[in-house]
Length: 226
Ligand code: UTP
Image 1: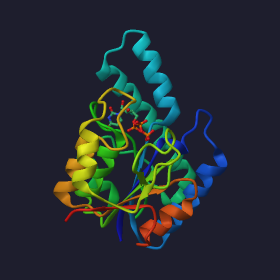
Image 2: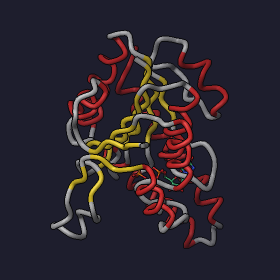
Image 3: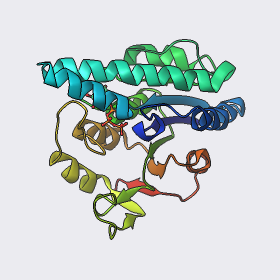
Image 4: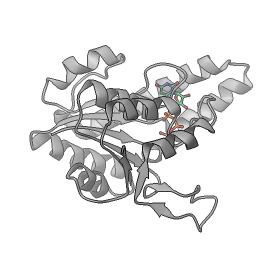
């Protein structure tokens, strides 16, 4: 199977948790050992937001802040690469055009951001499109897509399947500032839509959730296209 997994910022705390990273690395390394093709995209998390906020206060423009965020996502990707160990490719691709060459190695390929003006969710969608992934699993800090932000409203309900048009209408109302791209930025959804990428949102809390989604189990929120 060909898969892409986005590892959201929740995995990368201010002080990264070695046990969580090892657990994730073991589970994903096992998936590759079973003969599957895997691209991982690391998010920026708390450190990206902290650096971006500091750069903005120092007068940095949004593109510079985005570039700083990209550097942090690549540092996070490096941690994931180390956590996977020998089943991970030794280098992090920094352009999309490099990616198809990397995936031929039989190892997990880990990457971070690519260019300003988008989030790592857009990177994950582009990676899924160019590697013809059969599934894109988006690991977040909640169990899937909710009717509202569950951290702001505890009455928010988990949606088990969501139409791509609905996601796009939500994303269009979101912000496009460095460090503040919403759950999904419009570019990410547009790419998912044009390539009709089978996508599922799950919680990163347990690596077993990611593996279950990769195995096609009905977990979290599924994106539907028709
Ligand atoms: P993320 O996409 O991880 O943003 O990249 P996020 O909102 O922190 O998402 P989580 O934490 O994964 O949930 C961090 C920042 O890096 C820049 C953006 O500024 C983004 O907010 N970035 C990332 C880019 O400019 N381009 C990219 O391709 C990726």
